[in-house]
Structures are given as C-alpha cells and as structure tokens.
Figure 1: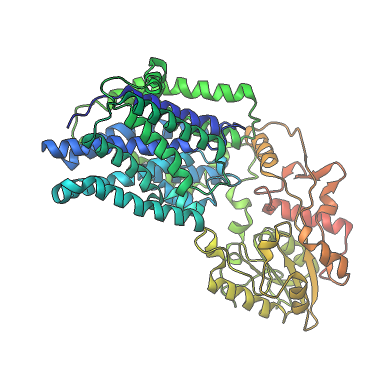
Figure 2: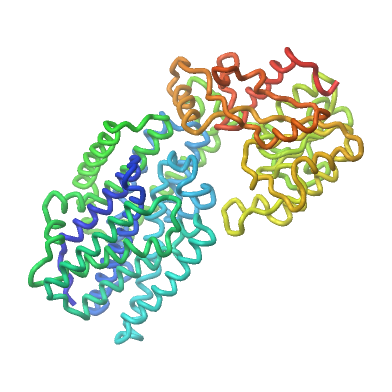
Length: 630
C-alpha cells in the first residue's frame, strides 16, 4: 500500500495545536479548545496505523524498529522541555511543588503521567490544575500506552482477519466509544485521563487509514463536502463545548469525526478540496511541523505564569504564543528534526534518551526529597516542609485508627487528656494553635483529624469512582462515626472543619451539623467550635506566594474578606452555649483579612494555616481572649 506525505495533515496539526494554545491562554470564545488534543489523537491513530499496516504488508515491520522510531521522535524534544522546566522551576516553585515536578517528570518519561495526575489532581479543570507545569503530558502518556498495544492488535488482525480488518476496527471502536460514554457520565476525571476512554479516538484514525486503503475518494464535490463538514464539526466543538460539558464520550466523538473527514477528503488524488489546499499553505504546514514542540512548550510557560499569579492580559497572551513558536522553532531544528533521523539502533536510543535520563532524574528526585525541595532557594522559608502541620504532627493526621496508635496528645503530655479535638484537615492546621493554648492552660488535649472527614455523624460517601472517593470509603466513614462516639465521652470537645464548603461536604443520612453537635454534648461535654480562618482564593494566594518566592518586599498584606463559615451561621444563631474561637476577629477588618503576622506568611495554601501562623495566631488570640481551656 502507498503511504505518501500529506502536507494537509500537518496543516490539520496546526489547527489542533492552535486550538489548544489559544484555549490555554484564556480565550473567552474558544471554550472547548481542548478538543485540539482529540484531533491530535485521530491524526496519530491514522499515521501509526498506516505505517504499521504498510510495513506488515511489506514484511518489513519489526517491534524494535517501531519503538526505536517512537523514542527518537518523542523523547529528545520532551527531554529539552523537562530540563528547561526544571531549571526555571528552581526559581519559581515552592519546595513541595518542586518535588512534585520532579516526580511528574519521571512519570512523564515512563509514560504514566496520566495516572499520576488522575490520582493527585481532582480534575483537569480543577482549582490549581492550571499551575502544574507538566499536566499536558497526560496526552503523551495516553498515546504511548496506545502504541504499546496497537502494533500487536494490527499484526494479529492482518494475520487472522485481513479481509475483515475494517469491520474489526469499527467494532472495537464502537465498544471503546460506549466505554468512554459511560466513563464520562460516571467519572469525568478518570475518563479524561485514561486510555480505555480515549482509545476510540485513536481507533477512528485507524479506521480512516484502513478506509483509504480500500476505497477511493475521487469525487471533488464529495471531498469538498467532507472537508467543510469536518472543519465545521471541529470549530463548533471548540466554540460550543466547555469544561462543564460531558467529556470525552459523545462530545469528543464530534471533533474526531471532523478530523477523520478532513483526512479522508485530502486523499483525493485528482484534485484536493479547497479547505485541504488551504491547510497546505506553507506557513500553516510549518506550524504543523513544529506542533509537537509547540504543544510541549506552551503549557509549562502558562502554568509557571499562573503559579506566579501573573495577570493574562491580551499582550501577555500574544507574548506566550510568540515565545512558544520561537522556542519550538529552535527545538525543532536543533533537536527534534535532527535526532529523529539519527541512524542508531534501539539499544543506543533507549540508553541515551530514556534509561540514562531516568537514572539521573531518579537520583535528583531522591535528593529533592532528602532536602525537602531545597527551601534554601528562597529567602523566606514559610513554605518549607517543616512548616506544614501534617509534617510536624504526622501522627495526628489520617491515621484512621482509634486509641494510642491513632489519637495523638498535644499540650502537657504528662497528663491524661480530658479534652479532644476532632475534625478534618482544617482542624489539622489548627494543631499548633491548640498545642499552644493547651500548654498555656496546663492541659493535655487528644487530637484526631482526617482529610475530608468533618465530624458529622453518618456522612455520605463521595461519588464512587472519583479520585477523592477513598477519603470516604466505607471503613473511613465507620471510623468517623467511631471517633464521634469516643469524643462524646470527653469533658470538653473541640470541633473544627471546613465550614465554608457547600452542603454536599456535610451531607449525612438524617443528621446535620446541629444534631451532631447535640449528640456530641449528650453526656454533658462542653463544646468549642473553631471557625475557619478567612484564607484567600487561588488567584490571591498565587500573588502572595510569588512575592515570597521572589523575595520582594511585601506590597499587600490583606486578602479579600469572604463568608468562609457559612455552614455554621445557623448554628451560631441557634446556640449561644458552645464557645466559639473565631480567628477572623483578630485577622480581619473592613479592609480585608491579614495573611501575615510579624511579617511572615501564615498559610500553607489558600485555606490552611501553617505551623508558624497557627502558633502566632494563638498568641494573638490570648492577648484578647481568656484561654477557653482554663
């Protein structure tokens, strides 16, 4: 079978990469530009299937040759972006995020970054996802995982079902599409990142390749119609789909069919349709040729700017696109185009481009962990690992055990605790605060805190299949009920949680916050409710963090004041009896809420206090209030 160079496919690559980049810089119009990745998947599926089928038919296909070409094509450019991103991040990323970057670099080289991001990032579209420099490599992982499987599938089909290969491919694609649709409806994050839910898109490219080998497209009117309708499907998807849409599934099918139509239309040997001729314009083809480099480079630039809290003005958006193009041109001519033609075998290319970099990255990852992400890179160590409550008080966090092995003691540990603090991660960030007050009062306080588990009896689990579902598995919900049972036997109970979260966070079967508090005090225990500190939104947090990282003088000390304890408002109106500790009385004024005490930042993220902040807040509290534990 003939396999000729198709400049219009490079042109289609240009359309795909520009959709992705314009979406990522913050277009208000192209709300579904991420479908450019789906177009890439179809193109990749088409080309890989075409190459393998040709070589299998000619008897020249070898797995070593196939994977050698993949390594030389993909890895050198990727290494340059990884190295450059790591170097830039040394000056930008805080210690924990820097360690995560090295970890994600390793996952990227191993083609498993989609797994890492699924298990560590709530969603591709979630709060701080736009600050993860290598998040875009999930799609590379999906493709590489597909390449591990598809050569075996194609060779098996050709050897066993050659005459039915188109029908077999279509049958597999339909099954995979149904899986994708189901996944999109039940677990959007899982289906977004994982191969089984994306494979139908690559299979559509494969179907296109087989169709072109079996049917001729010589009608110009048909070709023009296919290309116009195909472009409309891609453009409409980019304009009408957004991050809230069901995806992938049926909404991913639309741009994939569009891409397949354009590829089919361009196969007209007699006369190329008008749209495909436009895609063959040299500037468009050139963007397509450097599209892989553009895809690699654009996102780390955007993510690091987001991390620094930079405002994306029109001028900056244009600057990001221009910088991406310039870096990609340099990368294309210096590395990508040159090294892919390197005449070396798979052993040499594997050792040079994959195994050696993996060894060096692994060693660097070990060093980064050992030295806590190198906090000495910055003048201020507010974000150092030892300033995080879950590090200093690791025994108090997420033990999911009761008794001595799961409940830690703070304050005067020589005494038996008659007070207990129970709550979620917000409660955890208060441990240093409670420890300071307990020592001041000469009391011992038991502590049990667990992420995403507010002290509400009979909480409902998170939606099954979500990557936070594990926080509320059946055994952990049982543990939560058990610790409430234990807590009600103490004389004094401190309750803390993320009171600003929506109702679903506190949802329970027949119980609400008030009834749980009544239950906790049913044996006569006194209650103290810890309100959540004001915190700040992600954008504000990024700006404060950027100032700290750069060592600039503090220009702004206040965050916007928000209603962060809305879930407790009814409780505070109905019950005067519980004592309340409201840190915002000390931190907030009509102008906003302080995020610095004594010139140091008091938060470890946008919501949780760091150890220093919790301790200084306790000192400030005792200046204005009686110790509640006396």
